[in-house]
Image (cartoon, rainbow, N blue to C red; front, top):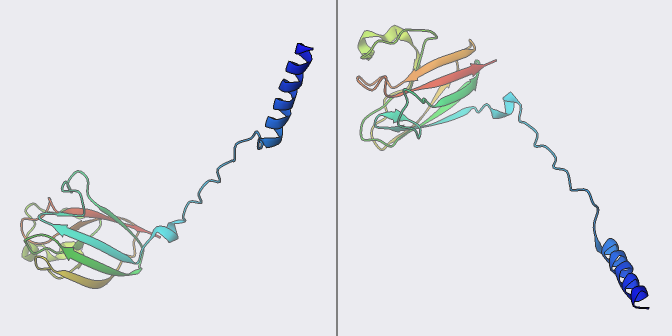
Length: 158
């Protein structure tokens, strides 16, 4: 008799748990869709300028910031000079040798495009057209003495 009661209780508990339980399989995660190259390429570049580096990393020589643009794209460049010195943002011709120190008046032929200088604690917005040839371009601050410490990379894609 005791065995019948225990067996009945075990059976009822098993049936109860089976009725209350969900499916045995775990829900499967749906992989996030990767954005296409076109979706991640902005038409506006926001650039923070500090003394003397671009972006959030003060080691632009070993870890330069990278901006990606589409070849020939009309761009808006938002410059935010958070430093105490004036700064600029200039695209150097592909594969050009940049002399150290870089002196703007001695090397105007090295640049594809250059912003105006932005005064300390000021912001500026400028329009430019991205280079039409795909590849990686060096971006520098052209204020004398700021390169090579103040540099980045502009990656141009088709």
